[in-house]
Length: 66
Image (cartoon, rainbow, N blue to C red; front, side):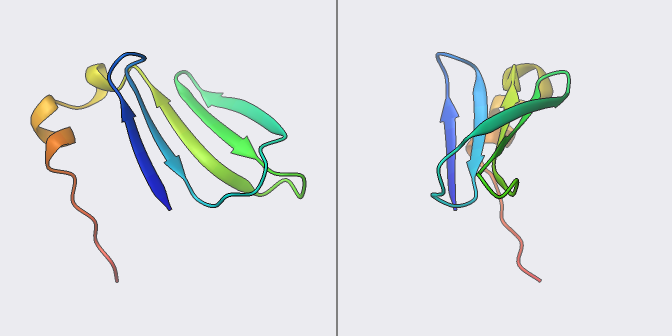
């Protein structure tokens, strides 16, 4: 899994695997899912991320495994 923050486009992207993206769908305003050829979600993109979270929150992302 990869996480990418693009300051120029103000986006946060989670890439779940490396399967080829064949379709994308905006499921909510500013939330886009990327699908592979088996209709599995392979990526999630959040637009306008600076309006959703603070710079401090982005700089200290925490991951929790259960």
